[in-house]
Length: 313
Image (cartoon, rainbow, N blue to C red):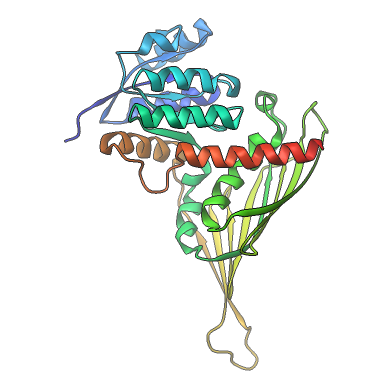
């Protein structure tokens, strides 16, 4: 039986509270406490889960083995830097940091202190994506649409860092080729930042990704289509459906030259699966297959920031 790990969550607002609930439910983890700069928030979540409330993340040092950081994006770097330097394993929500240089520093610190650094790109654990991911062998073209209703709590970052970065994170590891060119455009509708964005990524091997994200939609939509030789795959992240359309092996006169298969995936708990992967990585001292490593998070951030730069230009 694995030794129990001591955990804490730093930043227990909307998303951090869910992190704390998942740790509290795991049999091989002891949730020691939660930390939040707002004492009332920390006390409320701590009372709900029967743990200790801390005013500062530094009070956790020596008391826990691993932390989730679900604070504001601007605070990710400073908090994760302190935790890694103290020898704690870190799961930090996306985007990993504000700048690439900050991400590089965290990656170096994690290596120096032999700590796991994982980034919370939750869509990797969507049941539909888990079902289709290994079927993507040699992609030629991606088309992704990610639309969401406006939510004031997400406007500390642009729609690129809030929504589009999910699809960047999914696509980049699948294309085994350097990125050659990016074209991007975006507009402001409801905030001072970009609320609707489109990016076209062209890779050296000819693969193309066309990605659109909006936070001004009247309904949520999270879909991706992946085209490869003789077939294309469709993923509906919200409905947990995948479609597989292939060229028929034997063409018969009067019959369709393509065959389509639709698969409905059962509900899943993506956040619990992500946290379980983080805990397993800590237990084994090695990032589990499929997790978003610090390097992966850094790569998605770098492309997202370049898209933002091009849109401003």
